[in-house]
Each structure stands twice: as C-alpha cells, then as structure tokens.
Image (tube, rainbow, N blue to C red; front, side):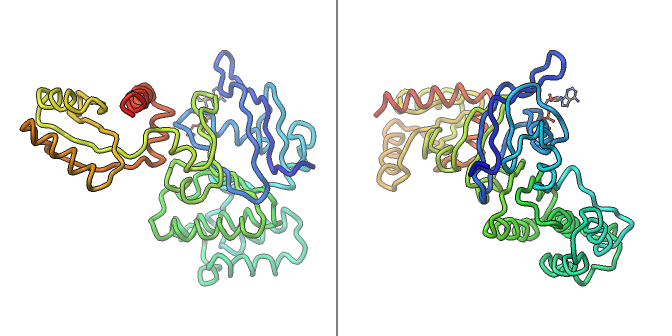
Length: 320
Ligand SMILES: Nc1ncnc2c1ncn2[C@@H]1O[C@H](COP(=O)(O)OP(=O)(O)OP(=O)(O)O)[C@@H](O)[C@H]1O
C-alpha cells in the first residue's frame, strides 16, 4: 500500500487508430482533492472509466487504494464511490428508498441507521419520503452523492458534481466535498467549471489530446502564464498600431483591437501608461486591469492561444 490514493503511470488507451490517452502519469495524495480538467474529448471520461475499472487500459499501471485496477478489480470497487454521469438515482423511488437500496446492495450493516444519518447530513429529511422525480437539481445531486457515501468509500470520483446547479446549491455542494476531505476521503474531481477546481482542488492536472499538459496547484498553474496586464481597446487598427509602437512590451490583438501590456497594476504604473498614451494623443476606448485566472491557464494550455501566450512571455522577458 502506497501513501498515494491513486498512482497512474504510463497510461495509454486507443480506440483503433485514435490514441485517446498517450502515456499519462500522475499521483493523487490520500485525503486530498485532485481535479482533472480538459476540453471536450480530451480523455477525462476514459481516464475515470479506467480508474474505476469500467474500462481496461492498453498499457501502463494504475493503482487505486493500493490495488492494481487490472488485477484486483473487486478490491478497487470496494474502495471507491462514483457519482455523476453514472448516477444511480431511481426516479420512482423516494430518497430514503434509493439510499436503502444502495445499503442493501452494498450489504452495509445497520443500513437503517446509515440511511438516517445520510438523510440528516445532506439535509434531505423533509423530502426523504417523496419520489426522487420531484427533487430539484440540487437535491438530486445531494442524493446521488449520499448514495455514493453508503459504505464509506475511501476514494470518490465526482464527475461534474455541480453542473446545472444555482450558485447557492453549488456552494452547499462545495461545503460537503470539503467536509468529506477533512474526514480523510480522497476526491477525484472532473469539472467544466474552472472556478470549482480553483476553489476546491489541492492539485490540478490539465489533459489535452490525451496528454497531461500541466499539473500543479491552481497558483502554480496561474504562474505559468503571463501575470497581471492592462488591456487597452482602441477604435481602429491605426490607433492600435500607434499604441503598439509606443508600448513595445504590449501584445496587439488585431481582431479585437486590443493591446495587452504587462503591468504590476499599481496606480503609479497605470498613470504613467495613460500619460504615455496622452502624449501621443491616443485614446483607449476601454481600459481594464486583468489578473490571470484558471480560465486563462486553460485557454493558454489547451487552445491555439498557447502561441500567443508564448509570444507574450517572450516579449515580457525582453521588456524586463
Ligand atoms: N468507445 C469509443 N470508441 C471510439 N472512440 C471513443 C470511445 N469512447 C471515447 N472515444 C473518443 O475518445 C476521445 C476521448 O473521449 P472522452 O469521453 O474520454 O473525453 P472527455 O475528456 O471525457 O470529453 P467530455 O468532456 O466531452 O466528456 C474522444 O475523441 C472520443 O470520441
């Protein structure tokens, strides 16, 4: 048994000629939240399916809760819970019956007590005897997660746990996830919401076209792309060109008529920048200070903006 809850090495999977996972390696520390991000089709679901024993890999090793997924399928399944796309909620059963069914399936001792405490924990007692079909999206997600917790799995795979939820329900869900981790559960999270990964994850990996293009904490990833910059939008290409000449550290975007100028964002630097435009009788129609967030990281690492960012970094290095 290693100290990693999940250890993946040289994982490969192809469908015919199409390579979906091209040799990926990562480890997830026990009792942490690990998030896998990537654009549609990057291979996230394929990865989760292999880690949860639903799919076999072509090559590589995967250990989950210390067990090899290829050889110890039963032990792996006994250690994990999966929610999201594989939602097991039966609409025609009540919340209580859904939980009870899960407790029976998993042969959990004192099932009634487990069901009761999960209904309490997820604040579902009032609706416990109503059919799940009448539940709101937030309640359904909570029931889904509560069902996953029957049997107290050590590792939980959460697939887009807050998709479609309103901001309040999303925050409730985040609170529940944080509590689980505080109790020692390991969470493997896939999400489309970068803010969610930013809020929750101890470690993030970005998957693109079957390869891991970055891994680290949210802050480490943000540091990989250019920092704070001022965004100036001009009325026409001539003004943009003139501004780019007097501010050579900036990167012009001809399509958007925007010039991005690296800056520390402090008032003195901003005033100097505006004075410089003034001296040349240039007027920016829009002016904003922009700090990188995970969206920028995602776009830079997974889109064709990667080249733009690389150029921007080079320019900044030259300007320094
Ligand atoms: N059974 C299959 N047969 C052939 N190709 C497949 C199969 N399953 C997945 N793929 C392909 O593998 C690639 C990765 O799919 P996967 O579902 O893992 O991506 P994803 O990152 O989860 O995307 P999304 O965010 O859209 O769910 C896609 O190009 C998909 O078309």
